[in-house]
Length: 142
Image (cartoon, rainbow, N blue to C red; front, side, top):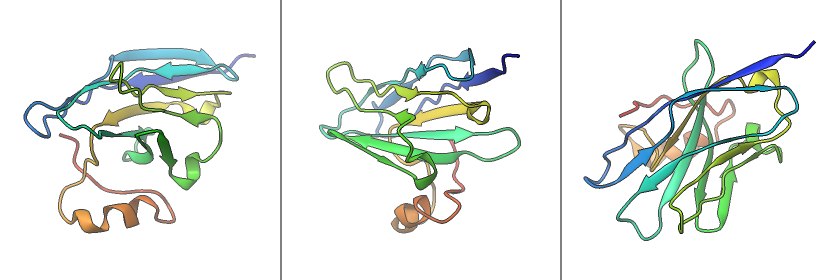
């Protein structure tokens, strides 16, 4: 019996610097366990060194930081260290597609991409919180 996965793409329009925006397709992606999906995210920014972030939100939970992509580097939260997740930034096409391989039922969630950390308050502790034991941070989506 096949297990279906529901991956919801949510648009997160971020007006962080006036002209900076992130655009995601909205809608459901339906796939079966073991398959590979790629979730699109394009961006427009005035920054010459953009940093893009991906977050995962499971049902009745708050979004969890997955990874950040910049230059030729992808830094992942410990829970997403597996080779199943990747999101290299492409400055030419101004995109940072999230590729999830060998899908598991636990990958069913809403995925968000953002141009910068979407936290409010004390940003000095942001990275400490991103690498905390449970990888859970509270933030406001704008």
